[in-house]
Image 1 (cartoon, rainbow over the protein chains, first blue to last red):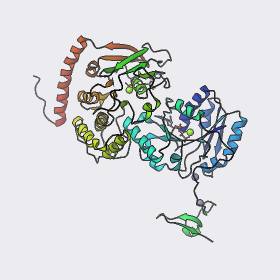
Image 2: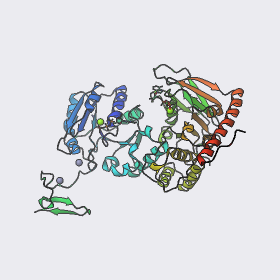
Image 3: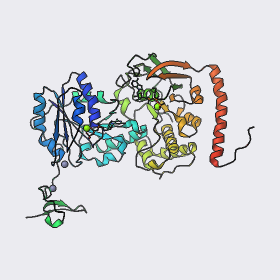
Image 4: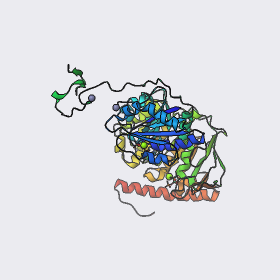
Length: 232
Length: 259
Ligand SMILES: Nc1nc2c(ncn2[C@@H]2O[C@H](COP(=O)(O)OP(=O)(O)OP(=O)(O)O)[C@@H](O)[C@H]2O)c(=O)[nH]1
Ligand SMILES: Nc1ncnc2c1ncn2[C@@H]1O[C@H](COP(=O)(O)OP(=O)(O)OP(=O)(O)O)[C@@H](O)[C@H]1O
Ligand SMILES: [Mg+2]
Ligand SMILES: [Mg+2]
Ligand SMILES: [Zn+2]
Ligand SMILES: [Zn+2]
């Protein structure tokens, strides 16, 4: 089973690009299945179902959606196996820019919207810097120069990545992406995360909801950047 | 300034695909040689921009039109399709505004770097921009604060200097309120392949041939006849007169009598 983890900020065009890519995969005789993880709600499953492929939704609710994705990866792979798929496409919610839900043995794809401006690649963090493929969307809305500057910024933070310039409306780039997925790695049994999730474990994580400082314990960071351990 | 690939590219071939209905477009192939200016004409929404997008991407049957673009009669290498340092194509698209939140100088420096060019070109770009636009722009101006005409002038000068490529695609340079004939001359350079989408009779007739688009497909190719070239000379006189009137009015001066 090949595993593709597709991450990117909300509305960057993940589903639009995937829809075209799935069609290209099916033309290449692949059998894709999709899992969409979101926080509270999504209608992406309705869009995927129109392609007549196995679709599963996971809602993370009060858990970090990336932690949820990581925790459930094994179960997703098992489900895709039962559905008779040979490629599992996992579309994440991409809200938490501190986490990057990419295991080592997967094809890690970061979808990024060029209209957000060339400073965005500097802000996205591990989601972008640890990806194998960076898909730049919505290039139809900016000039060629702006696309090239954006590309340069992506390469500054992730020099080794493959960049695909895609268009979620016309399907540009989907063929290329499908080819790369076809030659991507198989998911293993002992996968490791590429990037450490946040270290901090504090009283907020365990349900403390009073704002005042005196109620908090754990590994905490001050506004000035200083990190400390408060507690026993 | 001559780019590395300039001498290597002799011609481009557009192999026909399908129109909006999915039927084969009537024109099956068009070859364009270096030094030629080709126009693209057709009603709004007919697919003119789509055709130049196909050329920009060096489409290989992988766009909705199914067209294939050949370079010197051959399928181009994958990396010249994407790597800006090897790119053959510079494109002035219909977009009139920048979205990047940067100063003009920062942006041009980054663009020069992405194209593997020297940052010293930046001042040339700004100088050229200011020959096309009314109110001058400065290096410290924010891109997003430029007017439509200023952005368009900057995009034009950027293409002439930084993106300097053997193939130049221009989408409707006439609508930006900038000096269109100067802009075309600047972009066309020498020995380049130039493709211009236009609704403007002067620009259309300045090209040696024009491709007619209808319903998403290439339906005809018209060579500019001697008669049309004569017409072109006449209308460009009228056009220059209109331009000078426009300048007079822009300056806030009074328009004199018709000579
Ligand atoms: N102009 C343009 N619009 C695009 C492109 N790709 C996607 N869109 C539009 O962007 C919007 C969001 O696209 P989606 O594919 O739903 O984005 P997403 O990343 O899956 O969104 P979430 O799953 O909600 O995080 C839609 O309105 C798309 O039509 C593109 O290349 N160009
Ligand atoms: N061969 C084709 N097959 C499918 N769709 C097409 C084809 N050609 C054009 N289209 C679609 O038609 C629409 C209009 O095309 P386009 O923007 O290229 O028109 P245009 O001639 O540049 O118009 P304008 O003069 O307004 O700039 C687009 O949505 C485009 O995707
Ligand atoms: Mg989605
Ligand atoms: Mg157009
Ligand atoms: Zn997180
Ligand atoms: Zn916590």
